[in-house]
Image (cartoon, rainbow, N blue to C red):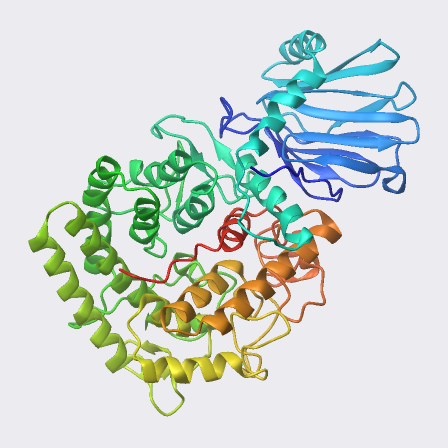
Length: 557
């Protein structure tokens, strides 16, 4: 049991009612983020607006700052805000701290606030609804709710959050509480065609369910609630097309036309290994087989079966399908046979083989293992550069594309590299001129001419660090893996303690505040996606939890 509450005040922390606790709609649930100075909230969905108090950040001493509870000490007394349900926020403040509400735009949804002085403090309630009258009625009724009782109910969640065995740094414990809170706030309830609770990288701005993000989320949730972890995967599978295709983004009303890295079987197998559940495994296995077969049919580039990502015309997002949107791997003329796509697929074949064997399907297990071996052999024959000692993509029908990217380490994670190849990969990893930056591992080598701080062009991402850590452990580099694990946890914790947030990606030099990094060409809203580095990001939180718990798998398939 984790007996620590998050308690760092800062700008941009997500604030919403969680679908883990009750109805939380993708369509209409109220989503906000913290406004540091003056103290308040920015409402993001379904109606934009601001609630704030005449209270500078310097006068605040945070007591509890979670995704649905704010408790702050001020010179005038206590300030508390808590989500009562998906459409209603309640709280109290000193009478001298009058709340201000500004609604920026009302497109079918409305915000209303009600206040009353009770017991020497100002009771307040804010609500959203589809009419002004309904919002006002909802807010007025919520004034009767007991704020401290609702707050206590919300904080019970932390009673089930995990504590690692042994001593860990205090900064990790504090950040552990925060990352559990981030996982919780980014959950929706069942809605439309999605029959179970589901996760999103961030309730704002992304909002949707994402394929490979959901796999990472499951790895964090398994330490809190294994049923919720399974639901994160089952939700994705529930939106699978009849032909096996799974889109990279999904919602109750939307699916995209491209896919994403196939890592769902890996995540499902990790959940099964934690606590075997043959019923769930048996339900997931056919869908996972059909999905991988779709990839192998629709993304193969040659008779060897190696795979290529879909390439887009957008110069700021050449391959959203790869998950590495703007990687310089995709700068030139494609398509490219992709080392990571092919290695992910080989790994999935191994996990499907393990699943089949657990289900008593020995012939299927053997076939999947044979296919894995063929894919691994093709990767090593066609995508390994023996001169440079690194894995690269190859232009279809042409030469290797020698961008030294994090994708070159994925065959190590997948267990398809030889010991000699891994030795050479580790030499690149340890080189401070290449990948051993102050905060390793940059997604493009420091000495590569395409390296920059912009997203997948050189910043450090927690999910790819996780792959590298797991690969190092698989091949016996335990000390180096532990060093990278600790560096990763320390850096995430440092920025959380400074700012209160868990970020999408980080400066590999360890100097810049993540929100000041480039994202698709510019900083913040000027970037190509219309927003900057995302705060309170799901997979960074999930993998922090998993890395602290020390259960990164050895890599057995």
